[in-house]
Image (cartoon, rainbow, N blue to C red; front, side, top):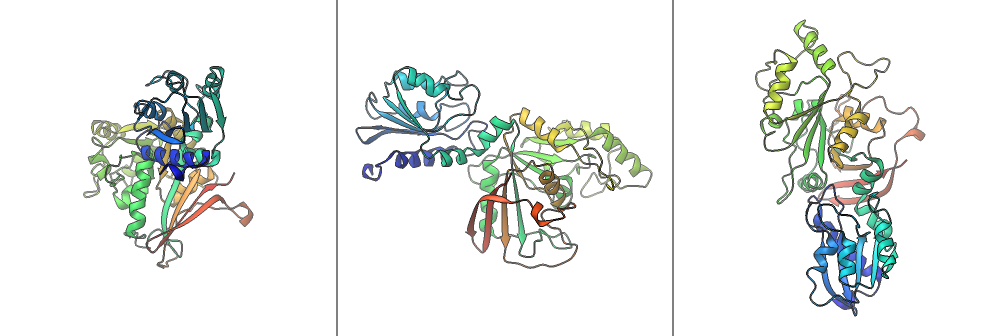
Length: 404
């Protein structure tokens, strides 16, 4: 096996493979791997296995097969130099007398940000930065965005037919995509810290929004529900004691909706089966909190000319700021066309996963993945960069970063 590794890039590719094993377990920390090489032989390897556990460098150096003095160390992210949940990685690198460190990319965390490299160099350790730098940054795109923007990294995911529909006119959507695509979505749910939908998705599909991958981690469920219309007997409410759940709402919008419902101007359906409505907003809030749901009151977005009555929108920028402040570094957006359009319009989406199934359902009123008013000229269309296309069973998956 040793003969397969001849260049720093070869070792760094192994580091990246190791780092990916921490996916879904280390958030909001980055995924990091480490390889220790002495006299052309790999004598240790490790990765950051779970949040709160040892970092990759310490995991590797504590499990060396021989004395690492004089060895070289490869790591995809700059070694930390501050005390957090674990001691600084620079300390153990110096303690074990590593002579050279190859770093994929520098850390954006202001507690590190070049200081880790500088400490090593000041103690006589040779450091080379920029080995497969682009690949290293892409692996931790969530971490870098969260550190630099203080907002969650948002990935919009949807499955559509070849004629661009996410459901039939009847609302039926099971299943647009094939089993392979749906299995991959479970991997995405494990990868991202939160999953976000709008109230329409909950009312139509009554989803669980959990991760069904073996050994996977359930994302924090985030529901955008300005008027607090979540069905009280929905799967999300019934399982809120088991899976962390957040409902973003607005008291003014909820009260106005209840008033309109009682006067016959609107409709209230707080129960999937019975259609019963809680008597007051306060009763609904108390009930949801008793079930274990966290309610975040979010300001309303300033109404636009021609907006529909009784359809207020939450200030999504404010919502993401609050979610980021709660340590939610990434969100898988599985909203319907309305929420997807709003998130794109507010420039809050970073990546897109689009699954296209070889089916045609037609229907002028069938739902599409992104609705809203849209752009008026093709030159204003949202474009993707770094596009990757893969085959999943009969489906095609297209993913890319939103071009800024």
